[in-house]
Image 1 (tube, helix red, strand yellow):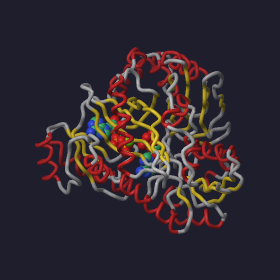
Image 2 (tube, rainbow, N blue to C red):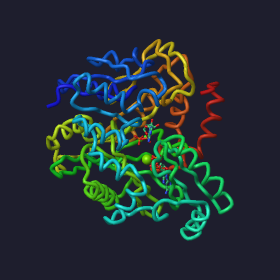
Image 3 (tube, helix red, strand yellow):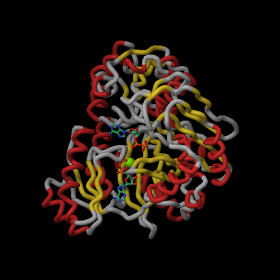
Length: 451
Ligand code: ADP
Ligand code: ADP
Ligand code: MG
């Protein structure tokens, strides 16, 4: 087993990994920015190495600094968390070169799956349904117009290096193409250093269904059921559930089988997620594979009892998966709600909910200052119930109980969401939240909360 692992991330996911390492009796070294030296992950890790200033380009995305931190502290492996270097094939390859295990799949697999249009090509060749669209990258506006004409509007322009909903534009008709094409490319260039885009038919009002996979180097692939992440704002997830509500049995099995086929086609290892969109007629299409641990992994842990970070570490050291497919069963219902800061600032008063069926993942403490240098997610509230209604009631209780004073957050808005009929009914699609948001905001003003 590894003796020491470098955690190359920050916030709640760094803490999540460090906690797991402690339980496995593995030493943790945190690589963090100057600004995060006084964070809880820094206090929890056995050792902390400063890898640069707050700016992510100079610290969390500084490959040489992270690698050097691992080498000089004698770490045998690097856990990249999510975001930052977690899906960077060049960084994973550098780790391999220096004999440091990158906790994730081999760099060749990251390269293949991290480039969305090459991943789609591989899926198509392996019989996994993909969204109709361009055959590879689209070079200019003329080509984009031509392809869109063929597949039919609306279409999506998507960044091949995309992530977190960035570099994506919906185009309703030909008149919008030029503008969208230029701005999607520019946004992708700024965010990922790669402005290449491709075209995809826009599936109208789909559900986002994804399947959690774990795989080892012996070719075992186990799927841990699906998650429904349809509650989104601007293509970014806000709330996730496991299992997906009211997904009929043959369809559920088909989606899960497609995910296993995708992982096998990719020669996958470690934990990963295969994402699909599902239309109202029950057609589903592969959109991408995330070759890392995901923000919403705790809902799967809640309903299956499998510690996904532990499986990542076991498979990284070359051990087989600790579970077999026939041992996996999904029990009850879990919901995760992402709590986002709406502004930077100091946390004055903090109370996190607790109690039966509740898990809170957060790096906040009283007196902590939320910085504008990083992602706005400050906490995740995960609830578990014997069924969906119990989970919803529990989530409502949790959102009533939480106190985060000093900055504005989305807590009140999410609370109102848990009371909304469309949410309670379940089976909503990806445009639901944006449609009901004005209604929720009106409610907010009524109760005198400015969110
Ligand atoms: P998940 O499916 O795990 O929710 P998200 O797309 O929400 O994935 O991304 C998880 C986190 O990682 C978010 O905070 C997002 O801003 C960040 N992220 C996602 N992709 C990238 C990327 N390519 N580069 C940098 N950060 C990213
Ligand atoms: P990212 O890497 O940013 O997560 P994805 O390809 O996973 O990008 O897409 C993010 C979200 O955008 C999806 O969850 C879905 O809501 C929406 N989306 C992506 N592709 C399509 C599509 N072809 N049709 C409709 N919605 C889509
Ligand atoms: Mg995605």
